[in-house]
Picture 1 (cartoon, one colour):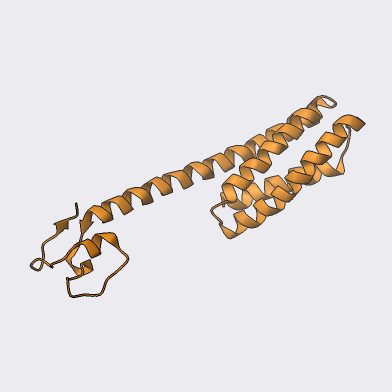
Picture 2 (spheres, one colour):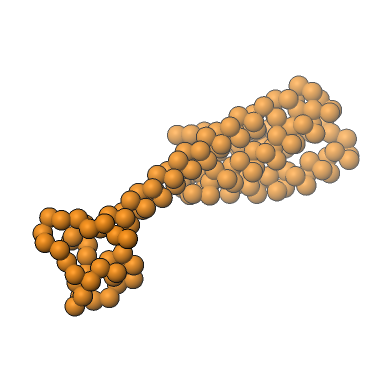
Length: 155
């Protein structure tokens, strides 16, 4: 749900920003350069968020960070409009940060589970000395199978 909300916020704010222009020529050039990168990021982010790709939070955070910068530049000309743009993108940045934190938590959990699985090998997964060679270093390092129901700690 948060994925689609972030994609919607990014698309809405960028569309509103593109269709209204109150900047001087110098700032307009900077904003258009940043906006071109951010627009590509917005499209990539919307696709990645909708499909649930792992890179989606990082793309969204980068795009939202560019949007916050654009809002600050815009605030030099119209403080209300610039502040609204910056706050809108800051909200999207907060949502992307939340997704990144969730992703980090899942990655740490997965790493812990892999470490635990490598340190404790159940009997059904072991290979005997006469069995076929496997690419799994834990099961290929075990040469004999103990009695049924015992667990072996890998060293």
